[in-house]
Length: 169
Image 1 (cartoon, rainbow, N blue to C red):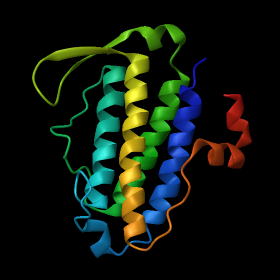
Image 2: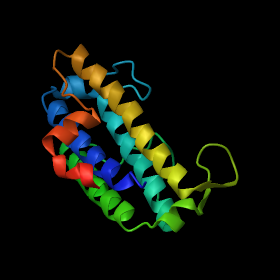
Image 3: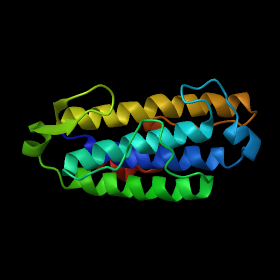
């Protein structure tokens, strides 16, 4: 069964909820080094978007324009939020249009870390993308707690409670 349409919508929902909570941070808290892998909430959110752009463009065979995994796509939270929403919508369209055969074919790409060409099955690329987001959203979730903001639940079961129609995907 292809769970990617469900996961893409869940991913969008999670990002909307997380960005909603991050909006409660002061500018100082948003940019402070919180000990996350990329330091601040700002840099972590940028990193998630960077990696999503890399993988979604690779799947479509398009240039991604990313020079490094710590690249800052947007300096402002508002611009980053708009870009996040656009990327989430792109990912939903992308997975909705991918058939089972395409999911099993390789995605060929040039590595950003290390040298050389590589290939990974498309379904494995998507698993990587969703897992990567979950990993770093968890870091932002912890940073929100450290700043005294109660982060929202970000589990699939809460998504399905709120959007039961997604369970049919």
